[in-house]
Length: 326
Image 1: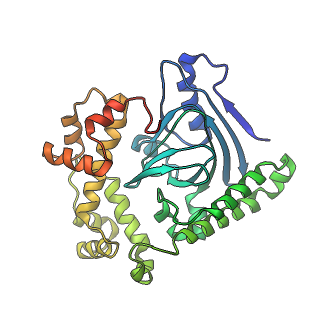
Image 2 (image 1 turned 135 degrees about the horizontal axis):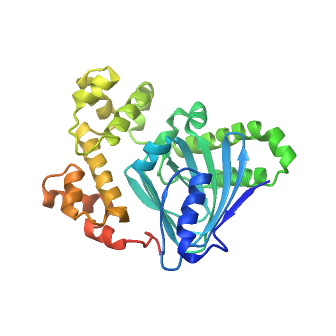
Image 3 (image 1 turned 120 degrees about the vertical axis):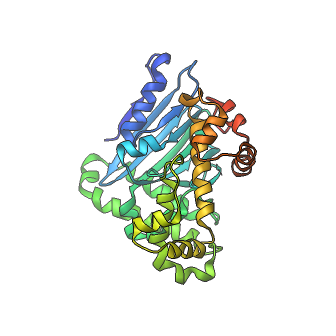
């Protein structure tokens, strides 16, 4: 039997807090930014298939923020595929952002910062898979986070349809078949992601040479993105953590068409974005956010921020409780 959670019937002054609690209980800890004056209508139905969770989401306008503080507090590491039934859905994750419409999908990972924003009366189907379970089927799954699907999306409909069919199982069948169905869901998602990566993959000619270094590349990037911007970080420190040479750190990043400086700059910009998007930090000036995020030149910071996110730091802060979609 599905577990259904809702803010309907809750006093409007407490709906936002209740909805944030529901999201934390069903998924993991997140911040919800909505219309505090009028509360927020939300309904979330959850069905478990072994280690895989299927949910149906129906809610008002909101921004969902998976912050570094929440990542550190609960340690969840899952891939979450969101299939909008209405749209658009805005996403910001792993240095990418954009919109996904009804019939498409986007994947995020709970162990890294992300934002998802929707308009009123937004509905979706969500598949949540433990990272280890999906990566056992497809080790390069992490490269598909926040990446726009390349094809027409027919197989995305197959995956969504399978999840919705499994949703309709009775309790006895779900308990008996749950673990096997969870494995099938992970396999189907792996097929979906592999299909999206067959054409136009970045640096495709070097793919064979990159397979052996994918894990190491991910570890290097993870350590850069997880650093405290107020504490200096260099390639030698990351190399020491991984027991490799600084030169090898630079070569691994170069094979993936990036550099240590580019990744560090991206990490600092992401931390600035998170602080500016967090209403609890509105008491900080933009310059204070800039310094905390590891920048020292205000003009350079403002230019880099606008180039990266398509808006100024001030515009992001002024957006306040309003989601990125209308």
